[in-house]
View 1: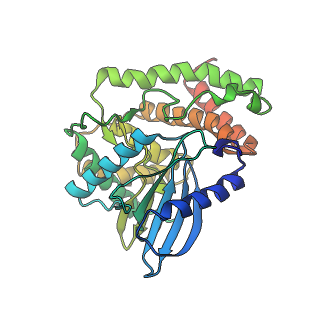
View 2: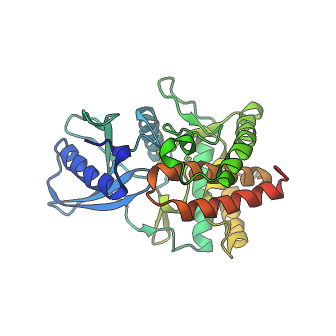
View 3: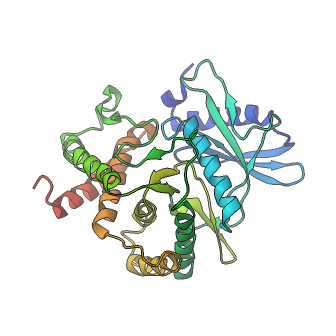
Length: 330
């Protein structure tokens, strides 16, 4: 039997459904309906029980995280829930009072991890943006960073750092694998091998000058829900020891080509600086983090997509524009 990594996208979704059903046997949830939600870095299913209570199940992919990351995520979620008024998911324990359900599978390279959350209301922020919401999001992020500015991570937890381009648990130079060689053109390889050491140095240097704090790590519009002027923050899987600018850059990574980008930035900073008025943002650092994200995804797409060429072309164009602006390789 093939491992999860060897399956097509449809094959992964089908197998994940069977794993979700198996994992649900460990929960006191009488399932009425289970349906696929999305596959991003992980696979998500929606579960409705006999009382019409709604849950989200997440099956983690080893490419993006490991068990240590899951423990950090849950610790951070509970800290935020206890110490702030930020709306975040609540983890549901299984019958054994565990927050993470582990499935051991002989044909899988790694045990599969499943976490169940209570459903958060609202609609996805992507497609429902407004200046008022951006201001609220700024306040939420500022509150999060204010909380962790002096927070000491427990000794038994080891959060990842965003100190290099390939910083996810399962990251590797996938572009060097034989199975991907048809997608790796000389142009692709030149961009990757020219830019990666420069960005690695820049990211690592941030840790030499300042003390990192716990951040969300993936503060993007797909991890934000909104309802009746309330903002809900999801998916703390990428919680990292990094810097506030990482969260800011990741949020605006998804809006940098939007015609309202400057208006969104202004509204966001109005909210953020209402909590942290003295924070100074350097646009050059934001651009570096965005370029590192583009480069990371340029590599990552090879492992998760059966047809990555359009995505590769788009990211190469963006990275070459960054290199030209910074006079890298020119």
